[in-house]
Image 1 (cartoon, rainbow over the protein chains, first blue to last red):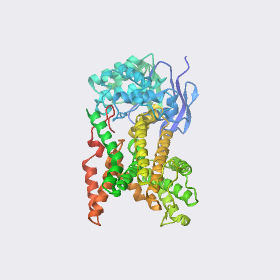
Image 2 (image 1 turned 30 degrees about the vertical axis):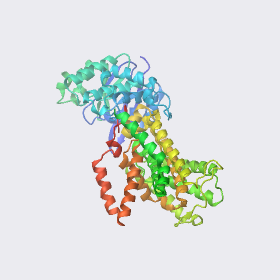
Image 3 (image 1 turned 45 degrees about the vertical axis):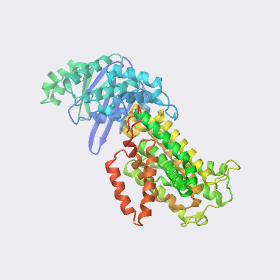
Image 4 (image 1 turned 90 degrees about the vertical axis):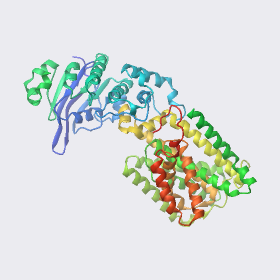
Length: 253
Length: 316
């Protein structure tokens, strides 16, 4: 087995009496799409927060490419190659789409204590940004203010921003949220295109998307991982079925 | 088209400002020289606040503190016989940088209402420090015995010379501001205003950038204070009172947050209105208040929001 790119060991996080993360041990292998699913309230958001560095775990460790990053702040994890997208669309609305992505490029192009040269004229920032926009199919919207983009386009923009940081690992928090029909099909295609070249942790409610994309799936219930495996193993797992009682249609769709 | 109109407007404003001393001389009305000089000084203070307020989204209600640091740096050195501008000005810059670094390092750990309150508290601390300095006039303040001296280079006792020094710095501040907000640093600052959490996730250690912006802003305001004390020849804690901070903020909001030319327009409107109304009636604030409210309500984005936008830079 290859060295995992991301690994958590016995991660624990409680809020008051609620144990939102209960000894979670997770391994994400290089090049795989690893989906994390679970019913509402399973602790997916808390887990993502700990992976990204926004929430400090009570116990346990987070390893990125073998290095302990448990105590590292968000920006330092990003510098090590962890990029994320947010469940609620999180872009810079008053900037153009291209500006949004260029800022992401800038974050990983040395420090930004440069106070003189116009940043919008820097080819080293603009060219990779244009490439990332083209990669998600937004090249034609480069100069539109991000706030004016359609919801689906904004979600694509988020992916472009994450890609522009040239991450080793992409942490996608419900990229399909609020999407339907062609929009979600386009997003599935986009994510499928990243397969192989990128490592993805995909937290998602949309079961069609998860089973279409994931190499492996971890199922989170009440803060615990009850199963990890290939999609067909997860489908056949009675415990998972039990957890999703009433939602079997989703699993077998 | 809009960009050309804008460039033309700026050029016209510069020509007008450059000709004010000649005009005031011809009309034998030195009052106008003083009025425009005063507007430019407050415009610089407002411009400095706009860097953190308009571009960085940091609502500081204690910005007059740095004005006071500049005023007192010159005043205290002057009181001890150090009148050389080559000493006074660097000391003022250093003092306001240190003050801003200290205040920023603490305040920027908070946000929202707490940030407003803590910056206000720091400014009031400095205000009461000024009041308690009996040697330097205490509550009443003191007259500055002499303006900053620059050898034979420039004589600030000459009204036109002082005016042109203010004008030169006024122009320089705006040019620097324009470069700054479009630089990598400027974009980071605006990104933080828009969505700080996102900026951290992209990999920016946001605190450092905010702190540098806070220090640059404090230094710029300190320099405005140095000009102010040379202008009024008076040192007083009143320059640091929180109502002063409030006025600077009103100028920024009035002129347009997140616009380079906005604060100057806001300062001009504010001071001209004050001047016109106070000549009309003693209870001028009764009129002034509602006028401000109406302007803010009906001209969102300030006066600058009514002007054509610069190309390639959507306004925040």
